[in-house]
Length: 168
Image (cartoon, rainbow, N blue to C red; front, side):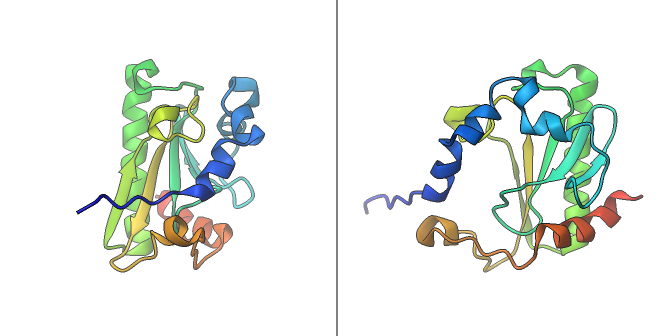
């Protein structure tokens, strides 16, 4: 049986755009570095932070509840993190997963990282992890086969739903 191939052409437009390229150059131009010092709020999209890591909404979500976990320092790979940063990053990722579980009562979760441009990172110069709630029968492949994303809630609604679970 031949392998079926689907193209995620909706990502190509962003990944190859001048905007994405500018987000990849250096700390002064990094969209994630611009978020790192911000306090949690609906306007910023930041949900939580400590001295070393933070959680924010993905501005271009694959589905409802799509969160990003990032080190506050501008680094491009896991190997560049110090031991405390590494611990904080993965502790924060676990906290994000727990918040999503509590907020969404999902059937599963995609958690992962695309390390480098070749691996699919849209902004490869600032390490980030994804946490994305999933449900049986969700519409995950709509963007692949129909160039359409189905999001039943706004980013502000997502922020409100998840933020309460970072409060404790």
